[in-house]
Image (cartoon, rainbow, N blue to C red; front, side, top):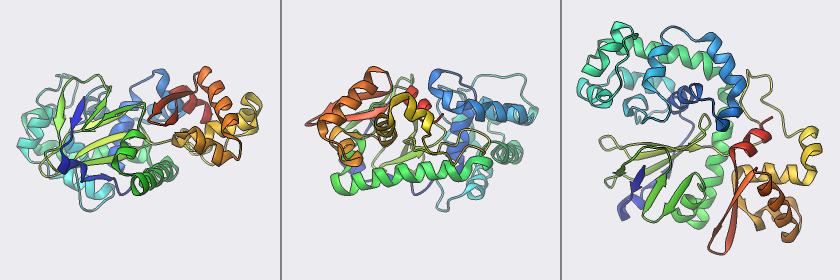
Length: 324
């Protein structure tokens, strides 16, 4: 999928103000249905949630299928943040918007009657949908919300500094390798063929904890296009039932990689250049280069050259290892 940005769009590139509960909710529903290598970080969380799913969750899993676009009405653009405001907005979805969002959805004859009529624009089932979303949030996200939000805040802080000091181009480039940026086109490999424009409304970058690949939410009305991308993993992953959320990289990881390489891997959770690795670890650039070379050969990081800088970021395997 491609996003084509105009000059006006580029002046309206912004960061989401905070972690959004509905964005995380719909993204986690997609993660729940995946079991590929990139989602290994969420194995414990996935196991716990599956055991407690209510019957109404079948509707949510149908709405938020992996490798499929997210229905825009499930992640409404609201002036007031928070779960309650978002759910209220979903409850007010108009019939035309509802029917348009679900017109290409596959038929599922096992859905309850109130959900089966949603693609026809029947809003009578929206209160039950809102309740199902609320119940799912309490089960799956509430126990890990604070540390997950901390991950998003850390990513936002890092991208905000880039935006302030180096501009829009640097922020877009920092999303590699998951996002390819060749001004004025931003492209993600989500398996969905097509392109969309922002229509001058701009682009909102939304770091998302429950994500392993970028997802585009097309513009709706005057709202901007949104790019949901995996938040850079820090040292306190929210992957289990809450009991392991305060850990930092432990001695076992240092024993496996060596203390400096373990520290290098942790630094690269935010994505940075070789010179930045050296500065943060207090080692020479040549030493930093040697450590990143070893990590790259082990499949834990990827490396790309951007002008005169060499940029490193974690692979899914590197993220999973850092989160163990």
